[in-house]
Structure formats: structure tokens, C-alpha cells
Image (cartoon, rainbow, N blue to C red; front, side):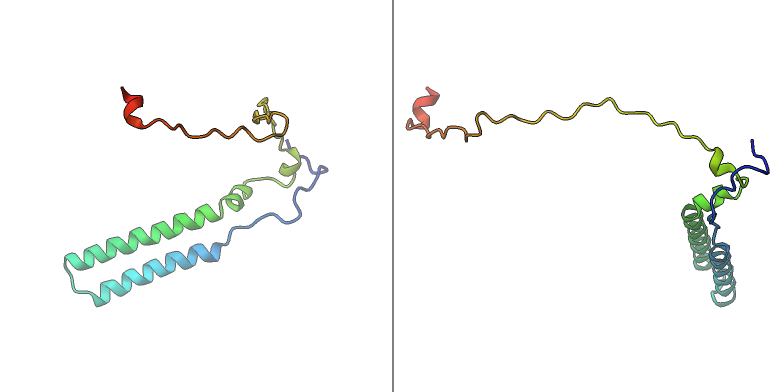
Length: 122
């Protein structure tokens, strides 16, 4: 697909911020070590460690979602951006029908009925 003499693609390919991922992993491991050293063994420490691990992995998943495009571009070759084709499917949806005004006038005002409700119900 790619040749050496083709287009060079994007001038500034996005790069993932690896420092953010390493920072999140380091903070999670540091918090786990701190919990291991400061909290007495028992159910509280186990619950704290589980919460720290789940929170750390949630932070890593968030980093992956934010760097999704950059991670995808890591696998592309230099000329991939010139070789990508997109299929555009036109929409055949019609314009919505708008209500028409008759002669540009306001509708007639209707007066309320004079008959009491008891007579109408019989």
C-alpha cells in the first residue's frame, strides 16, 4: 500500500502523553505501598487497597480514552493519511414540512360558550 516516494502524511502526528500514564500508575503503586505501611491488617486495609486498585485502573482507562486517536496513529505508516478513503453516504431525507399560514392573517378568535356545563352534560 505505501511506497517511499508517496505523500508523507500529516506534518504533526499526534503522540500519546506517556508521562500521564506513568504518573497514574506510579501514584496508584505509591498509594498502595503507603496503605500497606500505614494501615493495620484487616478488612479496612483490604477494602482500601481494592478501592485504590479500582481507582487506579479507572484513571488508566480514562487516559486511554483521551489518547485514543494518538494510540491508533502509532500503527500507521508515513503515507497512510493519503491512502485513507472515506465513503460518504448522502441522506435522502426531505426537509421537514412547515405549517403554512393562510394569507398571513391570524386565525379567527372564538368566543367562549355561554352555556353552563350542567346543560351541556345532559
